[in-house]
Structure formats: C-alpha cells, structure tokens
Amino acid sequence: MSFRTTLIVLNLVVFGGILAFIVYRVFSLRRNPEPRKPQNIETFFDDEVLEGPKLERVLFVSLISLVLIVVALVAYFLWEPFREADANAGFNQRSIGRGATLFANNQSPHYDSTKSLLCANCHGVDAGGGTANFVIKSEVATCDPNAKITEEYAAQHPECLPKQVAWQAPNLTFAALRYSSAQLKQIITYGRPGTPMPAWGVVSGRGALDDQSIQDLVNYLESIKITPTKAKALDDISVTRKAALDAVQGPKGDGGAKAALAKAQAALAALPATATADERATATAAVASAQTDLNNALAYQALVDNPANEGLVLFENNCARCHTRGWSYYDPLHPAANPPPGPMGGGAYGPDLTGGDENRQFPPPDGDTNLYTWIAIGVPANQGYGLRGISSGRMPHFGDVLTKDQITKIMAYERSL
Image (cartoon, rainbow, N blue to C red; front, side, top):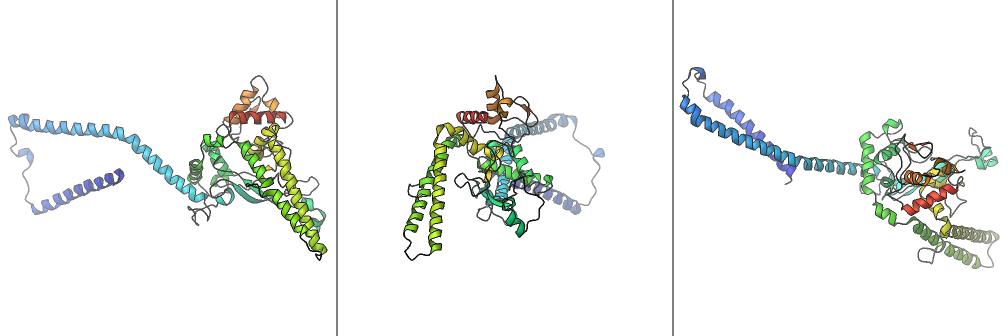
C-alpha cells in the first residue's frame, strides 16, 4: 500500500469515527429525554480539586496536545518538499503520457484514434525524423501567380506548375537540445509558415490545442531528448561521410549506386538480339539514369570527404534548413528530383547570411566571441546581439549539440559567405 493510499484510508477512518460519534450522541439523547440540571446551579468541584488534580490533568493533556502539534508541524515541514516533488513528478509523467498520445500515429503504442494528432507520420514513430509531402509554388519570375491552371497553360508553362516535394521533417530527439521550452511552445502553437508544419495552438487562430496540451507535447519532446554528450559524440562529419560512402557502394560494399549501375548494364547486355527498339531504349535509359546517380553520389562523396568543406557540411546539416531556401526538400544525391535550392546561406525562414553580412554584424575585436555565443547559447527575444541585431527569440542554440570546434568551423564558413 502506497503512502498516499494510507493517508486516504486514515482520513476515511477518522471521518467515519467522527460520523459514528455524532450518530451515537443523537440517538443517546433520544433514549435519555429527561432534562438535566443546568450546570450553573449544580454543585461543582471545590477549589482544592479544581486547582489540584483537575488542573494537573488539564495541563498534562494540553502539554501532550502541544507536543503532538509541534511534532506534526515539524514532520509536515520535513515531508512537504518531498510530497510536492512527488506530486510534480507525477503530474509531469502524466503530462508526458498525454503528449506521447498526441504525438502518436497508428504505428505507435500510445496511439488513440480520438486524440492522436499523427505527428509521427512526418517525424517518425521514434521522432527520429522523416518526410512530409508538401506542395510548393513556382518561384519563376515570369510566372503569373494568379493564372488559372489548365491543360493548355500547363503545356505552355510547365515551369510555372506547383510541385509536390518530400519535405525533410527534423529529428525531434534533438529539438529540446536546440530550443528552450518557450521556443518549442511557440513553434507548436504557431507552426512554421511556408512549411508542412501546421499551427496547433488555439491562440494561433488555426489550431485546436489549448495551452496544457501544447505543454504536454513539449514535455514529451523533452522526455525523449538525447544527452548533450551523446549528441556531440555522433560527429556530424563522420556520419555524413559514411552516408555518402554508403550511397556509392552500399553499407556492406556490395550495393549503392555502383551496384545499381552494374545491374542496369548487365540487363542491357543480356537483351536478346530479338529485343525491340523500345526495350533496348528503356534499358539504355536505365543505364544512363544509374550512371547519373553514381556520378552524383561520387561528386557528393568528394565534397564531404574534402577537409576544406567541413564547415559547409556542418552548415548544411544544422543551419541550411532555415538559412537556405529549398534546402529542406533538396537531395544532393538526386539534385534533379526537386527544384534547386537558393544560394547557400541566402536566407529563407532565417535571415540572409551572404554578402559579408555576418562580418558586418560581428566585427572585431569581439566578433568571434559574440558570434560563438549567438550560435552556441543564443539571446532572449528582443535583446541585442552582434553590432545591430535584435533577437526574435527563434534562433536555436547549438551548444548542446555541436562541439566548440564544429561551431568554430561553421563560423568560418558563414564568414566566407
């Protein structure tokens, strides 16, 4: 039996005893209806008894009562912080459970068809990241944004048609390392305009969640975050280089783009002499496509393997989502699959970092120190940073995710823009 259950039982027993005593007194009066003599005319104890044994008994009972009250107050004083901490921990655990249910999809153990928001459809069942289908509008300057899309218009202006892309949803096990609780609440409440992330908060005017439900999601994200030590030990550069190598030759050295090209070439060579022109054209196109994929994989591998590009790779993995238009759906291994991204660091959700803006914002002699603080720790909303910046409070902080050396390399790359 838990301590809480014991207290509940004890209170019920005391309450039952008091109720039984009241009932007894009521029924005892009915059995004894004879009026009693008023106490003011009844002979009472004389002074020797009142100021002797009677007074001693009363004082003794008072002393015992005082001791019990003091002991109870001291015990309550010592126990209350633990009770409060247990209550807060219990509330937080229940909040995390509600958040897990809100986050879940039908592949998750916490799924509830009446409550779950299906966040896991985009961010993955384990919140490790995923993709979301999203339609982007054409940004070609010659296109009319108000034009009616017809078959004739589509045939004449294919570059002006909207396009569906696979938007990379971020890994949320890092979210609570990069954002404060207040920042996470702001993101969930208002969403990310221009991205698949919708607004969920009632106060946004477009969502359905109240403040407690938003906090439940935040508490869930904070409960699944990895430790800073583990995050830094992942080594962004090494992970990216391995992914590039796997794209070329597969995780075990017998797959990837090389194996796909060899398979396509073998299929072309195996065509019989009686193969039709269409069959031969299809096999030839498959070889050309596989060769293009291999060329892209080799080019990307060469890029990430070059030590001079480590700052670029770190920027792409951590900063480009906000500071480069279109980077969230761009795949360097298949660059033709989606519209090309804007200039690296040229601005999107976050500001434009090109044209030497970073150097003007963080000039000597304290520029590097201030820039490092801005990236690693951040600045609260409406406070200044750098030479003339005013924080919006939305810039994530990377001090718990990246090492000092990695942040320094990002700084050098940003200054090179």
